[in-house]
Image (cartoon, rainbow, N blue to C red):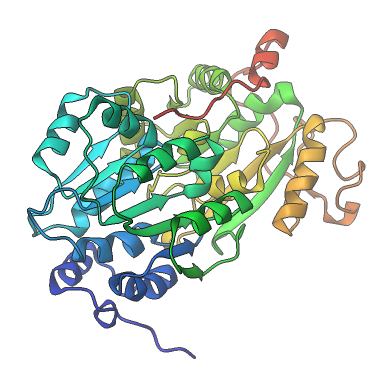
Length: 423
């Protein structure tokens, strides 16, 4: 049995160790144990680990130790979404407690003033989304020549959102080649190619295979008629253990519509997507975190960056088209050793995508067929699992309020209108 490694054995400064102790961390996660010594030695690194395994600590603790206070901007972190940027910045401030290191956030949807002020005064750490950072570069207010450490967090998501040209523009504006770190839960070919282009002799660290879920997550799929999805969700929410629930929809229209339906059913609910103003998104996340609302409905902008303790259930209201998206979504629950449930609603039209998802994941998801919501010709009879695996739902029939979608609403719900969050 391998002896546990202590933070004190990784080479971190006394200041960082004190911050870690304040946070109540007793020992490093595998990605932290493997990455931190290499980063302190100045190596470039490509790190792969599922969500909720401490990637931010893995890159930011050693990055902070390399900073010269008062030396201006030295660490630049690029994130795909505003929510993730805010989470990374909050973590950075916790890691930097007791020091003079300053950290600022640069992203769209808010006023330019505080961001240009932070760049002008030379805050040592900037956490940014590519869109707003490029905007400030073009305005001449983002001078990046002093950056010594460049970190790409969730690089695959940034490429999925079409940020590769912006990333390359940022790199060209750095002047000298910095120490470069790339972290993500998955590493598709496009990210592998980018890593080879941007890094020099990197350390490749993979602590969990791409697509791996946390051990504490139970995965279940419900067979459901499309028009019965709101009813099924309202019915499941009647169970007392469904305390803090994150629901993913495919579209912004679908998210707004579902929020309305749930509120009609008496469920406290809020929504976030890229059409919402930043202050609305921030307030929704804060209310959800504090328990003021029980359900947060979101599009894929929330599948990374929401590090909220206590999420009991994640619901894929629509089957994710990409296995990586599925992994990131369900990774919002079962974090830091906790347990949680991931529920996926599967309509008849989703069977092909669902089987493809299971194939890519390399595992079968348990399927439940509730008579009040199931569609005729279930997944079992259509070539899914054999009948012996079929399990009936043990809850009662019926649902809270009559939550039903009209045909035109259903068409809007199933449409694909969600662009990448342009930050």
